[in-house]
Amino acid sequence: MNVFYVATGGAIGALLRWFITLLFPFTYPIPLNILLANLIGTFLLSFITFRFIEGKKGNERVGLFFGTGMLSSFTTVSAFSVESILVLKDNIVFGMVYIMVTLVGGTLLTVLGAFLASGLKKEKP
Image (cartoon, rainbow, N blue to C red; front, top):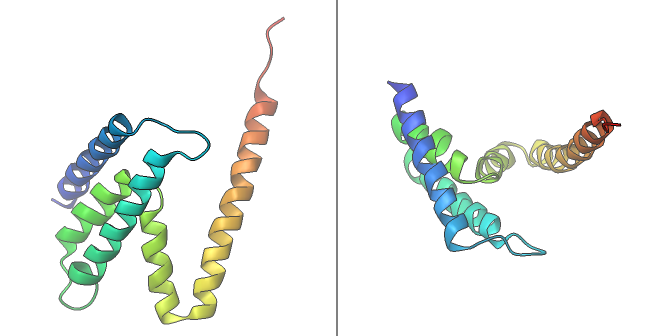
C-alpha cells in the first residue's frame, strides 16, 4: 500500500510541476518556473512535515504521499531543505556540514558529470 501513496503523490507532483512550466515558461537568466516550484514546495514540505509527520503523532501515509511522493517530484530542493532543518535541530555542526557538503559536493559533481559527459561525446567524421 505504501507504493500506492508514493506513486500517486509522485504523479500528482510531476503534473503540478509541468503545469507551472506551462503557466510560467522558462525565463533567462533565472528560471522563475523552477524557482517558484522550489519555493512553494519547500514551504509546503516543511509545513506538512512539522505539522503532520514529525513526532509521535506522525502519519506515515501523509509523509509518503506528500513528502516522498508529491512534493519530492514537484520540487528539486524541498527534501534537502527539510532534512537540513531536521539535522540542524539535532546538531548545528552536523547540520552545517550536511548543508555545505550537499551544496559544494553537488555543484562539484555536477561540473564533473558535465565535464565527463562532454568528453565522451564523439564527433562523427
